[in-house]
Image: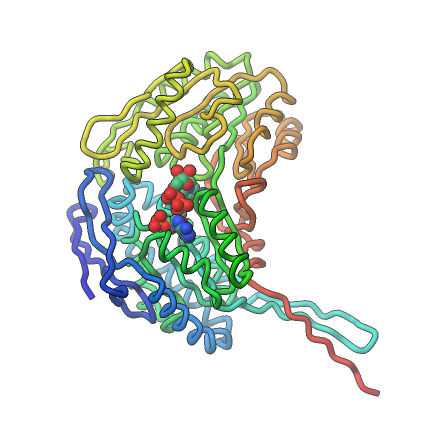
Length: 490
Ligand code: NDP
């Protein structure tokens, strides 16, 4: 199978295998099908990788089934040690993985290194710790005794998006700790770091077929996974539209378990009793970090009317500081967005805001260069009914509005079909509790934003989906309970 050599951080040469990773080998896709990977920072071709076809999904499922036969019987400490070993190898090769992610996604190298890698290794180590602590209950029954066993589901799949490698590890670490075998489909836009991780999976010593990693198109490989009659669970992160298709496919075929994480339209609520500088810092980061191509982005900002105009000035000052360009360079503070199609989508919202006469605070344009750069943009005084307050733009476009009372802030925050992540800024502990209790979201942060932890569950309510990544709760969704009943004979 072929490989590609790219230049990463400090000109370091990085060779990546381009085949499908099945049974710990890289193989070509059926009929030699391939897909092209682009560098969004330069709008040039980066690599060509295999594109899995439905026959390849069958191959991967066969490999996964065969592996599950023995994997389910290994001592849990083996799973623990392998996950820890993989975390060690990822730490060793962090500059390589972070370089690949920066090249194919446009995300800043230093963010890949400082945010994504620790989340990856944190989740691997956290769930490694759980692998040998999965236990059941002993239950008294009239005829004798019953006990429960928490067993793996079997052959599972995960479909992950392009916006951050964290999501891949959120799903892999827990699926494997629970004793399942896993087929992972990476995004067609960002397959390269996953190809490198596949090498490390083999080096760590995972038996062939325990983790298969497939590159491919969503509407071919993703759909074939969703419809496959012998895959028993599918975990997905991505758009609401695709989440619906996956659920429909599961319902049409074998009723595989489904968990969905479908993005958000996160409210950031700032009260006038908050630490102002802290609130401005996090509110800005929440809508500019990674160009806000994050499901937890704080894209609706509600500020108490008494500090509203002051906030707009400081927020705007801080948001303009970006130096855009090569994500591998230390001076760059803003990378490209993921693709031309995505740039156009973001700009279409910006144009809509302008056409509707919204108050443009800053930005509102494409930035210079061949790559897909868009200025940090903010509109003030945005009505709740506007698309900028309702739809997930997945780009650095903030909608800002004032509120008077706590009740109004809560009402506006909850006026959304999304419910993934919210941030509240106040120094009043009672208010912090009242508001965080009242907000309809899977996660609420107080006086901060983002910062996922391996031990805290992450996922949505309403149309942000269901199921959780990270934390003990995630483990539950990768296990099934079996009850065994003993009748005691007299
Ligand atoms: P998608 O939902 O299309 O992509 C996510 C993953 O699903 C990718 O691996 C994709 O493959 C795969 N996929 C696509 N179609 C199917 C299908 N029919 N069956 C199974 N899998 C499929 O998101 P986009 O990349 O198109 O982004 C569109 C919007 O979605 C963004 O602008 C944002 O609003 C939202 N989004 C939310 C994310 C989140 O974190 N919740 C992450 C990414 C996007 P392929 O890469 O080949 O398309």
